[in-house]
Image (cartoon, rainbow, N blue to C red):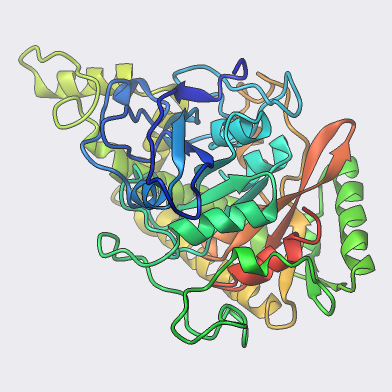
Length: 439
């Protein structure tokens, strides 16, 4: 396991029987596992051992899965390369010497390297889809509210979702079947609307009225009659080789009976700025609890509370986390809240409206998952802005609370390229069906 995909390698055995019996699953290290260290890739939580399981972990165990370890990640989920981890960078098994993407890079690398059959990550602005694209595997970001966040260490509550990685769309969908569904311990969860997959007749097609939606059954590869919308803004400025690979994948879907038309999402021009204001503001609030007293690395009390608090956070947090806390605190501060945070929320509403409108005339929207191939290790660390802009195609989906999947589309210069398919709210069966024609 030379790619440094795991922070902690420890087996957690599940039930003897179940839909995932005999399958191994790697779990991102911001998802709580009872009795097993959960660090969030940070010195702040380097020795933290949760006293409880996240809901998704309980469901994995009940389904018979064997958890094989906790995977490396950008610290507290803040990054696009898995290089901000306190435990060192993860190499990309599909493109050695390059980043695996982030923040769930360890989970994607574990699947790509064959160290686990399946994996869980979390996606706040692309943190499942980016590493899936960079490592040449499948990753699903579910609709906001489909999967419980109970036990996920919070970064941006209104944006993040736990989701699956696998080598095939059907396997990823089978893992989603296990973890999806309402949870009394997470008030933001809900069951998918009955008889609907975001469009008429989807999620419950060929099922009884009382059945749960089965996502793996949707992986039929049948895209005959599927209408694909291609947002032109998500191709502008993308790497030429990535764009060529994207169009090759669209052509392959056309050969199977799908058709496409171009759509416009003018709001996405402001999506990255809006996303980072909202995400950093929520991070500032969420990470305030890590003060060395209630949680996290101790600053060593010397009689001055402010000094102790500052020392704990200075030593416990890395540069990227500090940067985002500072910017988020500034955006929420008196006199600036309306100037930044309120405007970002207005932009978010505009993004959601654009997506909903585009999806009235398309079953799915398609774009390159990432506008660039994987960075070389170390390439983006000195330029955080370059890293933020790389999220241009993924963050709008989180702002709009929609489901999306990244599926391998091919390669450019020997580096993996992912195709992103976005569906209507709770349209997981639609994106699974469309993506299964490719993987």
